[in-house]
Each structure stands twice: as C-alpha cells, then as structure tokens.
Length: 306
Image: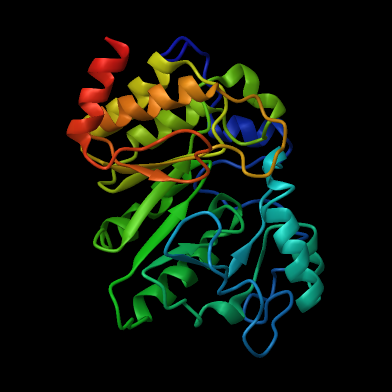
C-alpha cells in the first residue's frame, strides 16, 4: 500500500529483516555475539574516567554525550568520518575492539557517570534500537537515581523511532526532562538506499508522527536533497500536532560527497520553517542564514518568495 506521500513505505522491522538483523520493535536483537552475556561486568569494564563517555557533543551545542551503550549497525555513509572515526580513537585509548568495530555493546561502568551538562545526549555514539531492553532499563534507572545540581534535559535519538514505543511508560513519566529525536535528512526514499540501512525516511517520519509523546525534535543533518513541499508538510504536521519543539538543521560537515540541496533551496526551506513558527537550531549552515524573530522570517518569505 502506498504511503501518504505516494511512496510505498517499508516498515521498520522489514528493514532490519532485509539487512539480516531479523529484529522487530519490542524484541531484542538476536546478535548474541556482542559479548554482553555478563552485563554487570560489560565487555571492557575499566576503572577511572574513560575517554569518550563525557565528551562535549559535536552533534548539539551545550550538550555532552553519555555512552553507557555504544555502536550501531545502520552503516550510514556519513558516520564513517564522524562517529566511527571518533570511536576508533576511543577504542585505541581504552582497548575495546567492539568500540573500534562500532559494534553494538555495553559499558555498564559508565552508568553512574552522567555528565554535568544542561543537555545529555544518551548513547549518542550509537542507536538505542540495537540495545537489549533490559540494558535500556538500566539506563533509565541510572537517570532516575541521578540527583543533578542543575535541571537536565536528556536526548534520546533513534533512526528507528518506532523503538520508542517500547518505553513510552517511562518516557511519558519523565516528560519534564526527556526529548525524543529522530534524524530526517530528506523525504526521498529513492536516494536513501545508498546512504544508510536505517528505515526509509517516509517510514521514519510516519513512525515519529504516530508516536504518542509530547516532546519531539527533528535533526535534519546532514541534509540531503529533498522535495520542498513534502518535506515542509512533514514538519508542519509535527508542528500542528503540538509535539515539535524545534529542528536542528545543517549540511554535511565532513565532505562525504552526499547529494545535497542547493543553498537557495535550503535557505527557502529554513525561511519557510521559521515563518511557520518552527524553531531552527544551527548546525553547519554554510551560507544559509537564520533570523531570530519569526515575524521577520514571515516577512522575508513574503518579500522573497511571493
């Protein structure tokens, strides 16, 4: 059956099955070779403050990444020069082969070391969809037990947002401090097979829209070429739903040779977002400019594109 925007969506579980993971939302991965049988010890538990667990995030400003679980099997082409390269440096420091291979695995010794930043990017060097639910619940319990000196916001991000449905009871009980994110680089499914093994953008968007949670953020980075009317409609639907807090927007910062929109198309897209009242936070913008006042954004759209 064709999706609401004309594409035939591939469900999240089918994507995993297609790429050999045989995993469906709500079920743990069947990759039993991740050296995670003895969870209290972890694959490479080490004493002391470890490199990589409290780093400032390159993804988001005012944010530190907290990595009690690490790794992802989506093989996004642009991760090779960013997350994978970063984790290989960490692996050399701590002697963890699974980190070097970017293989989903656990570092339970980090559970008690939540960073002291206003925003904490939970498992930012990986994807929660590849972690067993019993370990994800250990992460939740660590957050519950943490008594921060300042108010914290926790980012949980996945390219398979349907996985969040398995934990909605906890998320909804912590809406004051938890924001759920997904990455939508484009609306075009037809170009995405060469970019990533993650669920296609159309599937990802509809799963995120259908998610019964009140605080959502979309990361459009690295932005890929898109169809403006469809991509804007997606953001409008989330905004009209009352769940979209803001959007992160940026180009590829690692020169991966991705199919990108023109600066003019990206500028108009950002202008239209801001004119609609959607907050846009800055990533690598190149020559794209933001305005601070949404009324100015609305005026700019009227003047430039009417």
